[in-house]
Image 1 (tube, rainbow, N blue to C red):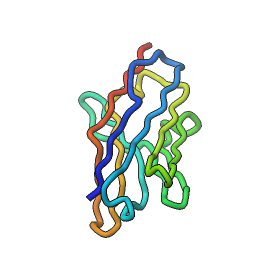
Image 2: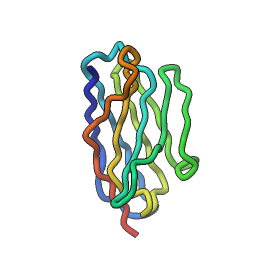
Image 3: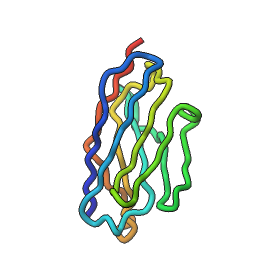
Length: 117
């Protein structure tokens, strides 16, 4: 089983930046792709970004050009650099990791990001 702990959320003004981190522990040898989803109040959880173990990335159209996902396999950590933040980026950001042998995703507890206008 993989455990994930997010950090780096907070309150920022529109146009500002935040960097989220997600540290993995447990069965880390079993991790494939890692990524981020977010959930705004009253809305469903949505995809933000993902990165494979080889470093290939994919982004939601709403964050392309503003967010950058990266990972440090030596530290078992994935990052989300968020620039040019907008109020609509507000929500709880969840880290996830694909557990290859289980065929399922592990999820973190989430970190709150609030962007004020």
